[in-house]
Image (tube, rainbow over the protein chains, first blue to last red):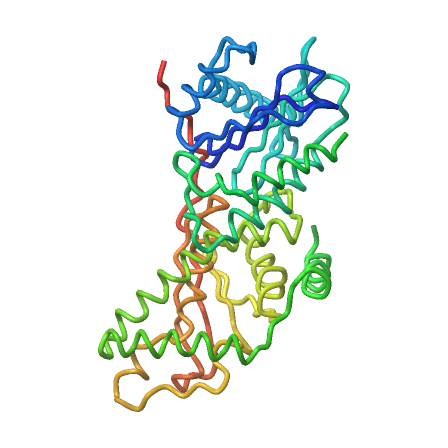
Length: 169
Length: 192
């Protein structure tokens, strides 16, 4: 399985964490690329701009905005069609699959992977329970609201995500 | 989810997924927070209540995530009665190992009371005999803030306050919770 990127959005619809891994299949066996973390939208935009090899025409910040637009509309549409019990889990295109998990506290976790990947609903839930709650929420010095990604951007969380992504093959 | 299965869930989380700490440590820590506030604010108990509520609110904003993670609840409560049930049987059970009784529903189902038969925060406590504390201080007021903060994160704006306390000589310890409104999903900012 190949993970391309990972986003977290908070209840204010703001992207509080972005992580991108090398965007090709061979990267799965190589060491992971240097993380691109959303400490602020501006730095993300520049750090991606310096990396022409990533093959992305859009900056990560723009990507995050697009991704949010899509999941927000899809999620609302699903709830309108089938009632509040139903939830949106994933969609796939010819080239990638987008996995979605939303908590009752309106945190939204999004992961983009290759198309062969099975459902990641439980994996995203595990990321929330074992990494986000443990390292971000329970860090007494981290702010409650993560404007600009502040507080989510910590080493333990980052390392946790890295090793987690390696194990969900 | 039925009421009995919630009770079972609360029991299970308490038994298997909660790290326990010494109850006296909690009681004494909470007590020293209240005592320090009373000292710092010079016996202005109205202000002490306010500060306790604020501290609780900040705790609640975080505690809800731990609650959701541990209880593994994925579905919203269908109505406010369910919410009350979850607060009592899962929430209080999981963090304090107590199950306050739900009572006194208002006719519009937007207000209820939690009756605390036991309150681990208030063990060993006697309010100061200065003629004011008995009528002004709500010793466990932090709990109100916790509930307000936690529910706000799951899109319910509520008001919570104590209406009686055995520490003040009342027969029961009763907290009143009032649903103000459900909070709508926030919409993304339109920047096109």
